[in-house]
Image 1 (cartoon, rainbow, N blue to C red):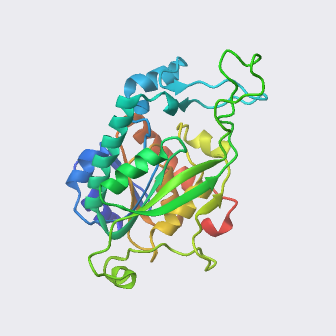
Image 2: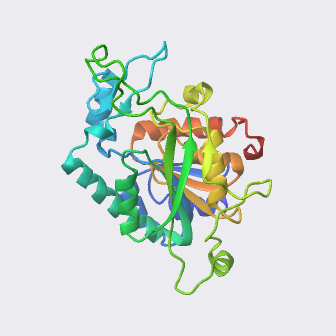
Image 3: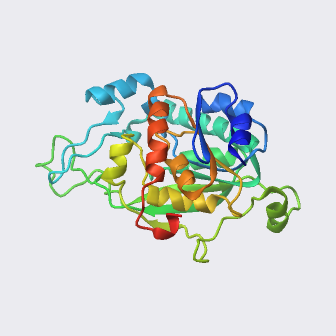
Length: 311
């Protein structure tokens, strides 16, 4: 899809910015998905707000001020200052129910814009994956497995708060070493084979790696490099080396439109831009939308260690 077609179909009347092969849109994704043409998207790759409320304006203000709120301000570890992270374990029953409802409603809208056979890659975490994934399947998606991002983090593994010396041999949660991405597919039409879906909708499967090997569900990953964080200081920024693999796999024929409904600073769109894929990123908050306008072209020009994904 050329840029003019991309803009006409997906910018609508929202503030928007075109890049070489991608489009950034400032809009609430729920409203936006209700308005764009049905079955116009080939894949979705996104990292949504899991606590839902952590990106409410009052919580972002607390995070900026260092007072926490739903954001936990972790202590330094071996001289390393750790980034704030949402208190997923602090969600009560009502908030978990809100989470289930949120993703169930979101998944119905996602089904509406995806072509039959279109895949959804959804970043998650070990604590809430079961809640979020069940909501998405309950709305009509097929569960196709999980992509495990193996990554060394400094999150988890803490001793009991205010009792570190009393219980030196105890940790309240395991040290995080993986990040689960849910992999889902919009069902094929009744009786349709994958080959038929590929021919008619350019969807239904995943693209093999450039070396001909299959896409794999375990990816050894790095923490987001500092050079990328200097471009886009977003709390949930994923590395280009990971996102380019996921975005590349999402379009089985290397053609079509990828959407990130929770764009943040635009890292998914930047991965698509680096690959020459058409992509639409949608972001509700003006601060992050403005960040994406600067970050997308800069991140797209990053050369990753995985040379095959630096096309």
